[in-house]
Amino acid sequence: MFWLVGFDRPFDENPNFTAPIFTDWLLILSYLLVIATMGLGFWSVYRSLRQNGKGESYDNNIPVKKIGYTIGIGSLVLLVLSFLLGSSDTMTINGVKYADWFWLKISDMFIYTSLILMLLAIGAVIYGATKYIRR
Image 1 (cartoon, helix red, strand yellow):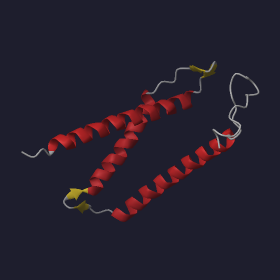
Image 2 (tube, helix red, strand yellow; image 1 turned 180 degrees about the horizontal axis):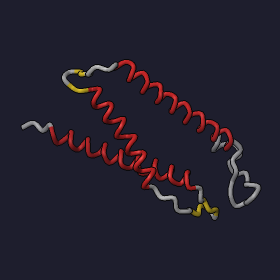
Image 3 (cartoon, one colour; image 1 turned 60 degrees about the horizontal axis):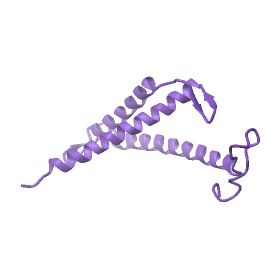
Image 4 (cartoon, helix red, strand yellow; image 1 turned 90 degrees about the vertical axis):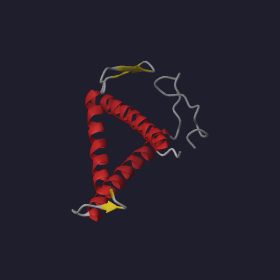
């Protein structure tokens, strides 16, 4: 609906830009998806911690609990570091200056974190592919 209905409607403040009719609904959907994702994430962490208990959890001689904690804490540390190291320099987009320190840092945090996690995933695939070569 966003692309098909009223997409060419000019923006009131600047007719050079378009203002699609369903932009507000798209923003509401985005907010709802973020809230649902965060809720599901918190619920899964709570369920995982409750289910694993306080003892050592091994599955087929693999330390599942230790790996889970390492990944969770590592991801949190990566998010915090990328937030602290992210840039908060003012940006000019479509002639409008954006200078909100918090949102600029958050944007950099998500960009840097996703790039680092993709590089780690590629490295893990390459490592896994080269480790088990049969001779």
